[in-house]
Amino acid sequence: MARDRPVRDGKERNESDTPPKHVINRRSMLKAAGGTAIAFTGSTGASIAAAESGGDVIEIDYDSHTNPSDVYRVWTCSPDQASFVDGQAYTGTNALEIALRSGGSCGTNTHFNVENALGYQPVEIRDSFMFRLSDNWTMNDDDQCKILRTAMSYSAGSGHSGGEPGADGTNGWSAGVVLANRGSGAQNNGPYNLSAYLYHMDTDAQENDGYYGNGLIEPGNWYRFETYCKVNSVENGQAQNDGIYRIRVDGELIYERTDLRWTEDRTSNAIEYSGPYTRYGGGETSPRDMATYYDDHVLNIEQGTSDSGTSDSDSSDPELPTGDFTLQISGQDDLNEYILEFDADSVDPGSNANTNDHEYQDRAVEREGLWYAHGYTSSGGTDDFDVTNGEILRVGVPKGSITLSESGNQVAIDGFETIESIPEDTDEADLAANGTDILVDGVGTSGTSQYEFQVSGDIEKTNYRGAYINEDDVIDGGRVTGTVSGWRDAYRFSGDLESITVDGPARVYVDGEQLDPSEYSTEPSHVLTIVGNGNESTYEVTVSGVIDTLAGRDVELLSETSATGTIERGVHRLGYSGELVDFTFLSGGTQVYTDDQRIDPADYNADQ
Image (cartoon, rainbow, N blue to C red):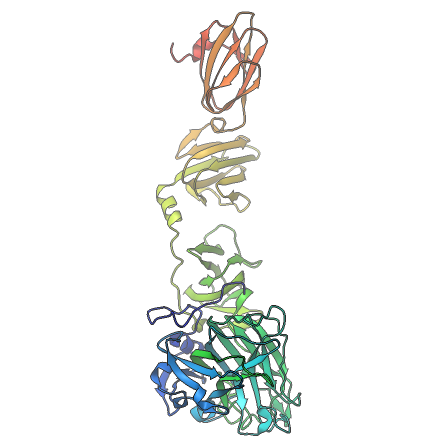
């Protein structure tokens, strides 16, 4: 996604700050797990919510503990290098710090024992947390550092970390993430790229799988990591290549595989541990004292448990859509109304949306930096909206029942907060209360009239005096173009009517008063001709529209509506719109014509 990531320096954050809305909090995490939940704290030191859906949500609150070992199993290398520290947190007071020492490789494991907490090894897990590198973090060319394990089977054997033999389906496996100064854009002081770090049945050792070309991580900035692991299925004792591993950073999918084989035993060689893990290099060592930081750690155990559990869902990963995507809204009842709120660059009605202006129009509007989709669909009907660089924030269904889907994957509505209505546009409200009505009336006329007009403020189509709202009429800023044939078009606008032209017999009314479009035209609709007779004459002319010189010397424009000239021989021609308001000879006198009709200037002399 192109949107700026949430950049936070833990040393500057305080408890009064509000986390970005896309960071999963306790409330939204319980919703994602499905329905009402009952929270309790077990011997693990973590808050666990048992959801009605059969899954579990495990939230680890660092502020409630003194030592990482209170909640994690901390082992390997240097366990004392893991600690809860204040002044570095993303939310609350404490963050988990795993320190590295200059010239060394060891940080440590801080893994949550999922099996102990739940009583079984699940086969599907989501791991979500905030992550930051210390401000002084640096890496030498081609160095790498492991930063987490989403899932690990440890007790089954040494296949989880490169022991002999490698992962064979019965002796352990793991799926994690590695940070590296490798690939396009990577530099010693950041940014750094990411990849998966896997031990599975189809490799003899670790597999740094994926292209180091994401260029995501800068020292000193917080990032939201979301990883998803689903253990492969087993048929007739054989591991199938359908295991899934995904990595997202700030909502952006940076890695995905759906063909992995980890295990032949989904009961005792499934997901045992998950959590932060820092170890620098393979053979490389840390170039200085530095640290990794973690916060807001949440584990979401999906409905799929293990072969010994109560359910084993093979449903596809229901990740919420982000970035560029098309959202489908399908109706379940006879009439269904929906409201969707997005944080996005833009939202546009798709090919299935009915954008015709009527009572059940489907539309997308922007209000104060957020986008809203609103519309209606019938039973079996589907509307769609194209979202650019965005995510869904809230969903409302004022009438009926709907389902949401993206690329064939259903999106659970229960996971979102509700929205009752689209926020009012203050400009639209002001326009409705104080605007001016303009009506282009073709009733009783024959043929088609084309019109175009410009206003200085805002404008919208209306049903004033029964007018149709025709999608072929175009509003572009303050300029409107359209046609009428036997009926009416109507609009309401703010500001001034600056110009209007009508080609055809249609009439124009502004707030009920008929007007002559020529009075507003910027193009001359009449020609004023003054003919010299050999004697010098000086004149001044004023029109209701706009006047300009077409021919003749010694003509001066006094304003947009008036001019003066002196003539002895030849002709002066002035084009004008509107009506001739005043014509006065200041001296002399001669013949004057409007179009092809001679006039008596005295009839247009305001002083007489």
